[in-house]
Image 1 (spheres, rainbow, N blue to C red):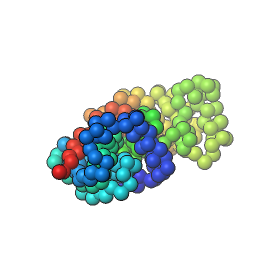
Image 2 (image 1 turned 135 degrees about the vertical axis):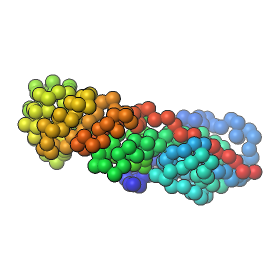
Image 3 (image 1 turned 90 degrees about the horizontal axis):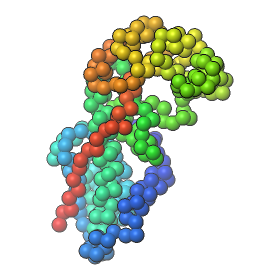
Image 4 (image 1 turned 45 degrees about the vertical axis):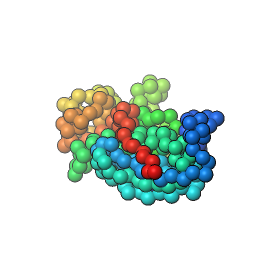
Length: 283
């Protein structure tokens, strides 16, 4: 799997963590500052409360270190690993105030990203050993896309484009604005000769137009399984094929040997439940 810094640089991650802490801490942690002496030190551990795939542990550590740069960590597990209920995830030591103040923000990052990785792992297992790859989409939390796409690949699925800048995806409204698929592909090719061009299609006529226009990838959007298989035969290797729209585990199983190259699933990031962890202070 790619490292975290392949998705987000240190400066951007630090800014995101500062904003998250500012949202929670505000003018100060009223409870901790009233109860815990500033010089107090503490040790803590994080335990998994279910089975899944870990993602976001480096972010968890950075949240704590944003409050106490001297905090020390032992990571018992690594991002991308399968984890099980009761597993020790990490131990760490530092300022007691930092550990308590940063607890919820750190766990929110860890739980959200591990939830996405767990869902990605569940879907990736359906196509293990097959040529078909499951992809995410741009249905991500604003400002958290880099982390969420990192979590997707930690779970074993692939990333679609990261934004509007790294691939051309001509959708229904683009086609309408350009006056048709042929003109949309031609204009996109003239402007973005170095980028892959994908065209969204919903019927056979549009697939034929996308093929004639020379699209690199054709998205079969909201087609039923039989129609998808028909379009795979029509395309016959002339372009990459992505199936999208209302995709779930049952449909992925049905299409695993259909000949499509990719299935994109917005629910990986849009609907994945958070994974639950406990952070316990050792006294």
